Length: 307
Image (cartoon, rainbow, N blue to C red; front, side, top):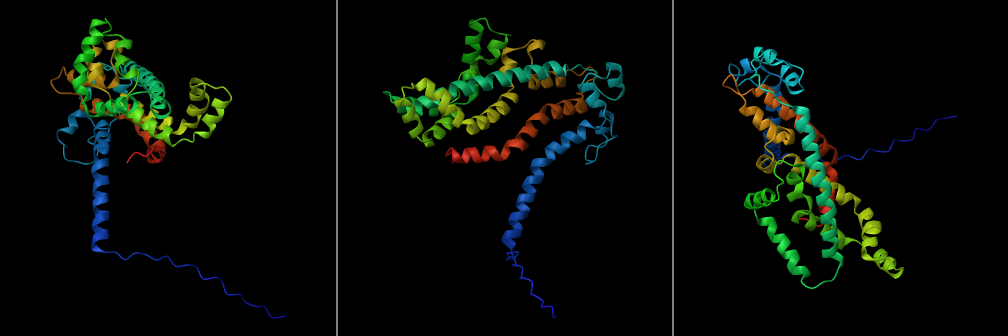
């Protein structure tokens, strides 16, 4: 018997685009932009694992100056003031876990409240028919162009007159109800939802409140999660309002606490290693969340019709 050799199917060849000057320049610009974006984070990491005494003499060195993890020990309260000063620290105290708890409470409460009330307002703008709806929605959109610093003083006077300074309620109240961006974001999604299920529910006797909780909200889980992440990140990084309203140590959030820690310099110079270590630890949860859900954020924004 003679064996027949079957020719193997030819592999499809990929058409590689020729390398042109424009293509090379585009990649060079992309790499440069990524490098400029990553460099600050690397510099924070490099400073946090260096000693303060070696930073001045190795200011331009890209590698850590006298590698040391003492800054992280100071952040987590595992190092005494004497040990910190021996390593070049300022000896200042930072109650990291207290500030972390306050930041989690502040960001979580404001995110949940803003999401709930913004979803209700967005549903009213998208589904309910009432006089002046478009005018009110345009007014909401116009408030997006007003910088937050313009409303800080009126809000502060209101919280002061209500006697809510240095309280958790006064801290979260201005952000608790709704935001124009959240209303616009969710309204765009609700407008793209099919009305057939809602109309069928109305024929069965369901009211708008039941439709909102049992039909609309479950179908809007993806944009709600995206908006929750964006809102949480924004509230986590909030600085001016917590600084303005809560000046007691037991209500300080991480951003304010880091500023106070920087200002406490018994030796005349800030503890840069400790400050960068605390900054890195406080930013790490947000970075991990954004890395994990960044693609979903982009897809949800595109689906909602935001250009």
